[in-house]
Length: 156
Length: 201
Image 1 (cartoon, chains in turn blue, green):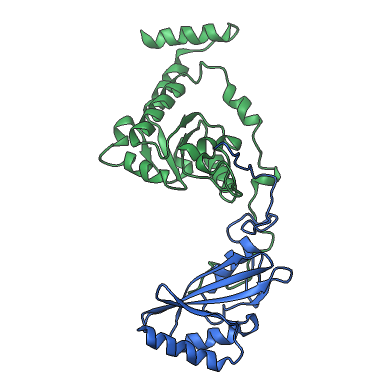
Image 2 (image 1 turned 60 degrees about the vertical axis):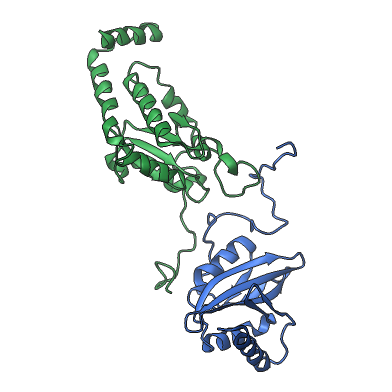
């Protein structure tokens, strides 16, 4: 897929969803499209119909007041990759699950829930996956503290 | 004869009061000649463990052979980082091994936590927090020769076991028991029906 085709595809999705979160760029050849959190589900359906049949990765970034969610999609028919980014507020970390669109989101969203505490509404089985089930807190948040952690001293 | 000398040494160390027969020494000697290893490979040290087992380094010539079943083995070789999530499973596998049994901690992660000692939220700092470790092998990862040297030293420990004071049992008493809270890894909310086995895609 050439860059022009990718730009045209993104433009088509952007017109379909009228009021998008204003973030779109081409980084390292991969398109990055930002969507508003309430439009994630419809954008996911559109991208799936456009040929992005594989969800490679779901992760999150702690930006302080907000969490940035990153979905990486791949299309085997178009041989193209695309990043979809959205944001959720830290004090109300809820986002719609994309499990219905890509079943691969099952464990990926469980991991993000485990490490960041973001709740995926509509996920069929939202439990911890990496940490023990009785663990308290979400370790990849920047304000995470746990009595078991030994901080590295300055002289090392 | 060396065997008889060792019995004498052991009796001296005990300070008398205990009578041991030479059958114990014979049994310990034969146990040390054939240590079946349970390869508890949890991370990258398992690669060196595998390399040590097969043709180039040939663990079998030392009488040690890997067997992926705790009920058939008597040495647990801990190769790799142990996380908090993995700890109950390792402990359960250790409990399934028949007595007598020994533990070799291979690599820095199982000795002390290694490079994961600081600033980590998920790694157990050393296998001796929940298992009675007999031999520590440092390295990140250790060479196969180092592992084989560690097993040779364990063999010496095994041969002296009946004659040595039972400090291993004292250490075991200080370790977490199955009734402790940290022992279990049961899920309080098991998955709903149809999702057993996880990722469908």
